[in-house]
Length: 322
Image (cartoon, rainbow, N blue to C red; front, side, top):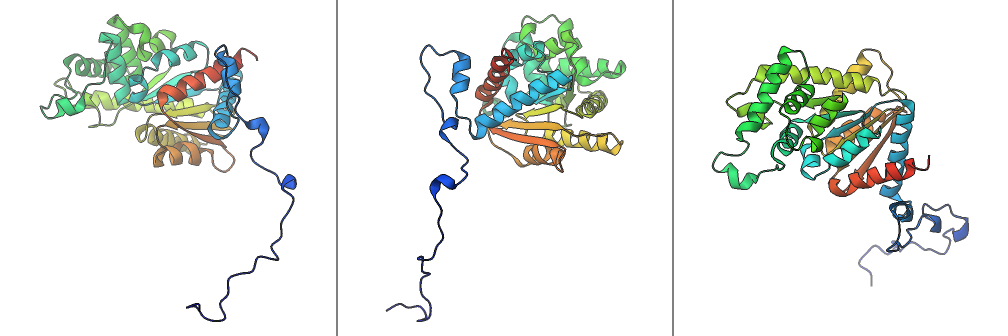
């Protein structure tokens, strides 16, 4: 005998309403399925073989919106963290820049470190665990001096930190300049804004550290970045790639500054690319700026070294047929 009340009985299912399966709208159909690739398949064939579902569908839509922004001459801003450089993606971004798919770069402080070291000696990314105990982490003499000397000269000349770093690094004629985003953007006169957080970057504890200059040049870059965001109205694109805190906060402040000054900011496309979807990028990049009909935000989860080349391939392969 049941331990429950005698009036309590399992719900009967005989009167449940059903419908014919074929009458139901469904989210996935055979047309969306992946197709096997052959050893002789081209890159275009490979991209076309991917399932038109979830992340692939979003990636295709992002690529289409980037191409639209280029056609409309609207900013396509790539906001990047240091891991983008450490995973070897600078050549991909430089190529896209030359093809008109990158009209500005915004970077956190670690990008300056890794990009400069790549340009100077062809390697970067120290073993923090091995050097932290001895207090040697981030203490490379050339890197810290370059950052602070560039900031000091930039403050003197009223430049942003990104441009000041590009100028200083280019003037050194480093052996690997062609693989440096700082050098490439400076040569092409593409805006490169740098957004340092005091105490968060190695530049701040070097003997040549100049907090006033770092702050002044980074603030100039915030205002430059805000002007680029203002120009996004009507079809611009902002990609946040590998920055979980600094750049999402900077982007949100730029958006509110632009709207505070009375400028319209609609028809935006934003996207966050990262290993995991963190609170700030999802909130400050993907959702808030595009809310209330102001645009559309996307989230792509995956390793940069896979997802960014895939995005580049989608841009270039589809571009050849437009």
